[in-house]
Image 1: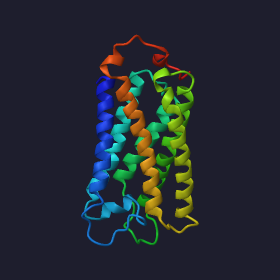
Image 2 (image 1 turned 180 degrees about the vertical axis):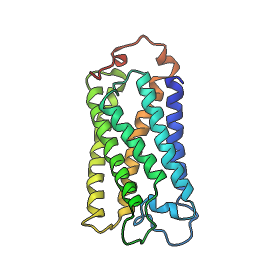
Image 3 (image 1 turned 90 degrees about the vertical axis):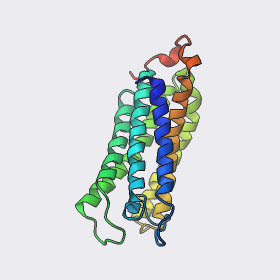
Length: 220
């Protein structure tokens, strides 16, 4: 599959992720509070499969994005690729291994696996993009204009991860669902920004242009 097709697949997967997440929240019987319950908690309600679908398509879209950037010789080798794969695996484990139903007092082994897979994913994505942004800034021409936006979104992720830790422990899960959804939204924006840029740089007019320094692998 070419980088253009991978870019289209990534954007499509992220759109499906948003749509499935919305579907997972609408039409539910009275009771679930999205500001209190996490996305994972919603698998136990009417539209649980839609949330699982969102997690799977988000991971698939990330793989397509990573492969598309690699095909365009964007410097993702090494730490960015490894951390993005941690994000993907964390999402898939979280989708396969469910957390406990809301209200259960003590965490089961499965819920602990789910929790730490989710935490690994939430931390790995901004870490990957922080390293990638530093590489892009060295002179990857068609991607340099994205660096400032990526760094701002990564900073927002840092605040989100810190807030998530606070509400999960000292905060006794107050507004846990709202904080988690805010963090997921920012991380999805990061992926969308990268996927849209990949779509732009693989447009036929640009693809046929003479390669410039943005085609040089700066991963070393």
